[in-house]
Amino acid sequence: MYFRLSPMVAVLCVVALPAVAQTAKPTDPQIAHIAYTAGVLDIEASKQALAISKNADVRAFAEQMMRDHAAVNDQALALVKKLHVTPEDNATSKALTTQAVAKRAELAKLTGASFDKAYIANEVAYHKTVNGALETTLIPSSSNGELKTLLQTGLKLFQGHQQHAEQTAAKVVIAIDAMSFSTTKTPIRAGDTVEWVNRDIVDHTATDKSGLWNVSMAPGQSAKVVMKKAGTFDYYCRYHPNMIARLVVAAPAKK
Image 1 (cartoon, rainbow, N blue to C red):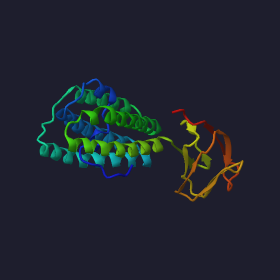
Image 2: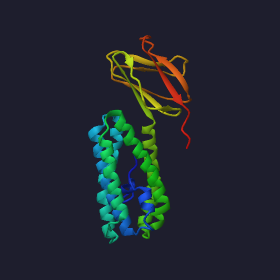
Image 3: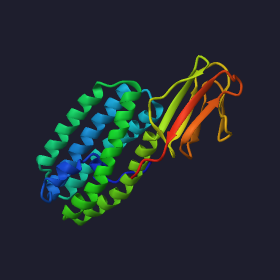
Image 4: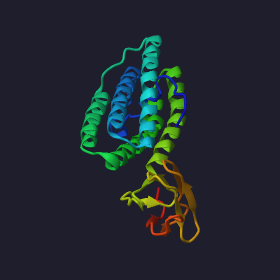
């Protein structure tokens, strides 16, 4: 996720493939407008996430996206000026704005873990979308060589963004509070990361009864385990054996 983004390219990371695909070969001025619009909309999405989410990983993701887009928007404007391109409003830009407003309204109704899950799921979805849009539509449609090169570089960068979003989506947080493990409604699959956060004033462990994992946490600390296989796993705290819980891990999702 933590890449230095190129001008123009990074602001395309929220272009929706259906909107792009419906426009027959967008011109460079149209691509420039799509890019700038997408950057502004992604900044707004990041602001919403920072206003609602208290999850450290979600906030870090949103902060990174907001910093990237705020920086590259200025660079994008400088690039179109250098290329003597006047951004041209178009159906794709309008569709992006309509879709983004609707999505923010939808997310605004959520709080806590529900918001975090929906926000990151949307991030994963649109990064998958933009990688396809860059490869099949925007890069082939750009006629300026410098713009095309930047877009090609951006495709590689956005694959890193997608990976980071997927890793964040695959992380499940379980709080240890009041001498008990919290329950989670988030589906867990093999390959996902489970993180225990100790909010008590004493040390705890998360210890699998079959011996697959054993992690310790001082007060205020956390520990992570990657679930390597599917199954039902009973675990407990070695220091406080009456603290017991269960994880149900499903098989990896089919791609």
